[in-house]
Image (cartoon, rainbow, N blue to C red; front, side, top):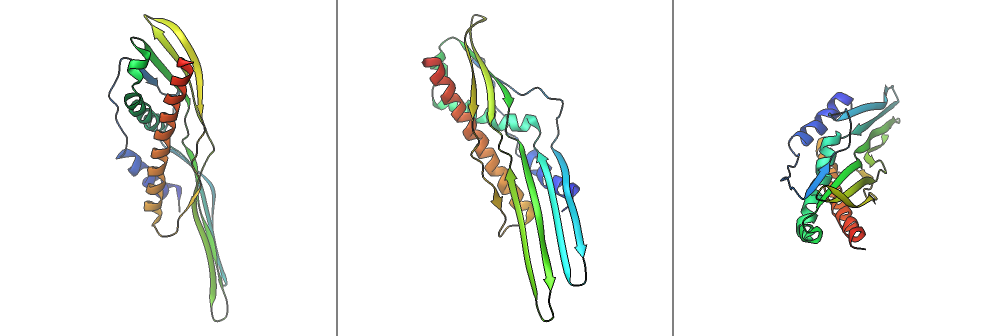
Length: 203
């Protein structure tokens, strides 16, 4: 699996699956400050050994979803939670500004294995897996009224994303499955963040 081929899987999925949010004047969610606007891919290991009695391969790629998309997934969870939990009525005529400082967006793709040819048979083993980096969602926030900050604080939500291994799917479908789960987890973290901030404001 080359970086060029794998980046095509990720870029295609991200391009067709970027959520949009309706703006709210009482809730502002700012993305992390960064100059990077694309998904990035770094080949950490690439080897293929086609020997007479042994074949071995190892392709390890570090992937990072572009910060704007990562922020959009979290933002979607924040906005949905704000509506369902009645955040607007809780903060009354004030404005809540959430600044995303760090969003989970990096994972490791591995495709490795070997085939050993014997006299009348062969043995094979392989692994295709995706491992998310253990990165938490980190923010700071300000609650303002008539331009004055009346409350502020920080929020941290731990990621619950787990490594997954491919058993039945193609590499493309496997990657898309992971990205779907990544989106759900980002939404969940956004929801938990709103709950945490509401609790801090009301305490």
